[in-house]
Image 1 (spheres, rainbow, N blue to C red):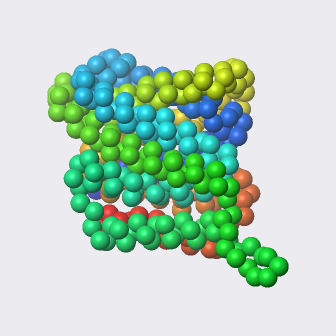
Image 2: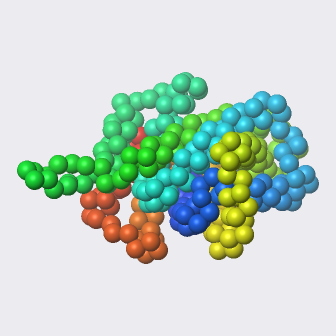
Length: 310
């Protein structure tokens, strides 16, 4: 149960980090915030590695580890987090994290394609239930002159970003698992001295790839001045620091540690509890109205994810 317990802790950390992430994103902007998050996470991860192995970088990682972790970073941080923080701005952290439940099906599909892991009928049923749960939360009845009809209560762009964030996390998780297998195979435990060096080192490689991606986007979009403005926003930087520590630094590192003790699907399922955990604090902080149907939908979505990996 070690892996499952770690995954549950990750869910709590990601819930808190999502709330701070929404606050920071609305003050700093999604792209500048992601650059800041990656820089802060590299500083935190480098410090952790210095204490763990005596080097501020994953010095024992081989070429294949760097390759797979870089791909994971581009997919999970570069693509996934870019979508996630844009969705925070458009639909808020509560609905964004609800769409993140789709990360589990995307992880399972990717694992099936890349690693040959089987998709069962029960898993397909779970995927369907998850989608139904999300639909219940995001759909509402809108009055017309003639009748009530179902309509999506969220902006379409926010929905697309939410789904994109789930794809990034799900695919990135599987790529990380492949990278960790290479890392642990080529760097025996007696050489790294601490089992925590694997997930921390792997996350650092992912963060480097994410930073490169975000810096490139920042330059191409001509938003470098926004980054300068963002770093002078003391309150926004505080939110960014907390979101970074709870997310890409501690949270993601622990999520990779969980992968070493349990299957990717099981870990992702438990980490998908965020949409339920975030409902009450989101209502408390952002004063958002929460309907009974939205709560039921979120619970059904998480239950669907759980069923997916039984």
